[in-house]
Amino acid sequence: TEPEQRAVARTYELDRRHVFHSWSAQAELDPMVVTRAEGSYIWDGEGNRLLDFSSQLVNTNIGHQHPYVVEAIAHQARTLATVAPQHANDQRSEAARLICERTPGDLNRVFFTNGGADANEHAVRMARLTTGRPKVLTRYRSYHGGTQTAINLTGDPRRWPNDNADSGVVHFFGPYLYRSHFAAQSEAEECGRALAHLEQVIELEGPQTVAAVLLEAIPGTAGIMLPPPGYLAGVRELCDRYGILLIVDEVMTGFGRTGAWFVCGDEGVVPDLLTFAKGVNSGYVPLGGVAIGDRIADHFAHRPYPGGLTYSGHPLACAAAVAAITVMERDGIIGNARRVGTEVIGPELARLAERHPGVGEVRGRGVFWAVELVSDRRTRQPVAPTGGSSPVMAEAVRTAKQLGLLPFANSNRIHLVPPCTLTEAEAREGLAVLDQVLHRVDALVDG
Ligand code: PLP
Image (cartoon, rainbow, N blue to C red):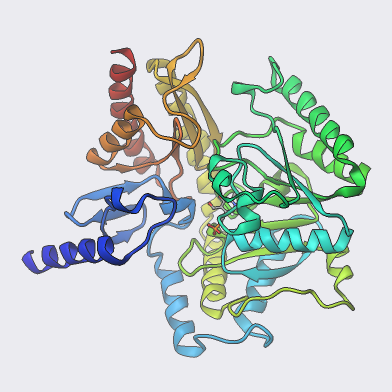
């Protein structure tokens, strides 16, 4: 209708005049207006329906506007809309219990934050204070957040303009067989060499100076590189050997994305600290946190922890977490993510990779998949540089949106990261659009 069109035009115009956006040259932006969303779909300002294979920023694990979670937030708003962090509150207590029951091992306490970056900030602070050591080892090809310590931890080009020389962060290479840094020919070789490399970095940095190794359970934005079997357990073993703490970032992987509550638990690895955000309440209200193992909790038993936030464990965010976790459990949503990945997305992507020369590799599990686009399969030349874009990538995303699919794009990759609630029919709908997109990519890289 005409009033709706005027409202959308005004939204856009005010955005361009007053809103300062993340990671962007402000004058070069053309944001899509989103007016509503439901389940796996969102609607843009022109009334087009898009299948949301981005889950926004890979956070709407239970889909959009889940009525159970929306109602829990509304109910909590009417009951107690905010409370200071020093008081106890039923939703915070219950959210902490539900999270600790799902994290592996002795991760028995939760420090709540507003999101993933500050969760990593606090995890690193806890590790440094507990060990009395300054350095943190993290991977190249990683993303840990946009605040100062978190962006220093990050191993992608967004770090460069933000780096401070005294960050105490040292980067190492993780396993990535398709573009192996170790000239490996098999997953087992990649795993062994990546662990030997990490051990060398530890030895040469001086183990007694290293507080923690921090890594994503599966690097997300950097490319969804599944760790080869034994890698995470191998890192745990190295940390134990050198008295180093292990921090696993499950901000993107946690709460169902891979078809499990957590990758760590799935792989039988217990970190000293585990950070989460996003899927904990599907981002309906900002929430993140650090799950804390007993050794670190004990360190702060009779010694104050020097950190806090006004909104630590905010009742609206925690009510949303309680509802989201409850509904994921009740409705078997994590099993659905695993099944749709194993039975539909994985096999169909393998078929698309065979048919389309522009596809270098597909990889993933659950509802967490990456498609690497290359201009030459033999040389594996990416169609866009790390952290950058290119005409081919821009055209791929434009084509997808035109055909009703919203993907998540980074560098030379299209990520298929739909909600864990995705139905088989929705999966097939999205993959059919991807097929069209890949025809377009093939034509462009060919010609
Ligand atoms: N860690 C990982 C693995 C992430 O993917 C992200 C966000 O994408 C973050 C941390 C940062 O989380 P936030 O944006 O909530 O600060």
